[in-house]
Image (cartoon, rainbow, N blue to C red; front, side):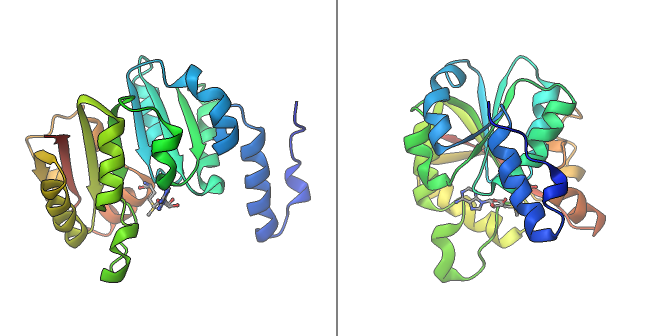
Length: 225
Ligand SMILES: C[S@@+](CC[C@H](N)C(=O)[O-])C[C@H]1O[C@@H](n2cnc3c(N)ncnc32)[C@H](O)[C@@H]1O
């Protein structure tokens, strides 16, 4: 078994980051591309699977996993030092139905089998406001087509953002890339159509900050047509 890194060996900030990278590699609920290849057949066969792409700290999905012990969760981000926060929380709170995958969304088609996901969450993805960067947005056509392959029939894509421009742009992308928006609101936390136990009301770290700043949160649910 890999030896646990000692936090005292990583005092200055850059080293703290290295410590988080090292810690990620030792945690049994965390995977990189390589270790995932060996483990995934045991994890993704158990349905329902709910994935978050661009999960950041993974704390949002960790909370959902604790609320729904009968479902399996997979938090994916290209930064392992962020994901490790959720992974640590899951260990502390004994949440065993979630895993953390350090990878880029570009690899989804290779890392996950078709039709494995009941839900895919996108929460507060980077807006990449410059038009020349639109391909990097997690609601860009190349990602939407990957999600489409991963979703089960009648599976849902759920998307939250504080950025109205990104929200409107994403709705256009969904409409022109084979999806149908089945629910949409420009004020998630003020919309009385949302039941109090709706998972969408669980806040991500970014969301809590935006709500504190008085911002409204846009939210939609889409299905493949
Ligand atoms: C603004 S943060 C939001 C994090 C989290 N969803 C939340 O609301 O707290 C966006 C996250 O998306 C991740 N990300 C951006 N592009 C990605 C990609 N192509 N593949 C995987 N993760 C990506 C970033 O590393 C970052 O952690």
